[in-house]
Image (cartoon, rainbow, N blue to C red; front, side):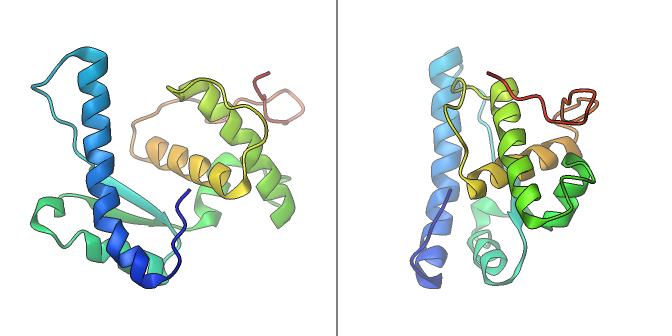
Length: 159
C-alpha cells in the first residue's frame, strides 16, 4: 500500500515508482528464468477513483518512455459488483470484510510469495481485489466463478 505525506510527494514519487516496478519485475524474471532477452513492460495502471490521485499518476505518464501505459480509473462499485455477493455489498463494513477474505483467496491462489499470514488490512485487501478484477477484466485471468465460494455463498478462505 502506498502512502504519501502530501500531493507534492505523490507527484514526485509516482514516476519513480513506475520505474521501480518495471525494474523489479524484470530482475525477478531474469533471476527466476535466466532469460535476459525478454523485457516486461507495465501496460496498465489501475487507480481506484479519480481526482488528485488520478491526476498525479496521469502526470507521471507524460514521460516519453511511459506513453504506452494506459491509466484506468476503477470505481469501487465496479469491482465490488463483480467480486462481492449482493449480501456482501449491503454495507461498507460487509464490503470491507468480504474484500479481506477475497484477498486472502486471491493471494493463496495466485501469489508468488506464499500464503498471507493473518488478516489483510482493508486498504491492502481492496487493492488486491481491485487488481484481480482488472486482471480478469483484461482477460489475463480466466476463472469462473471469479471467487470460489461454498454452497452457502461464503468465500472459501485458505487455511
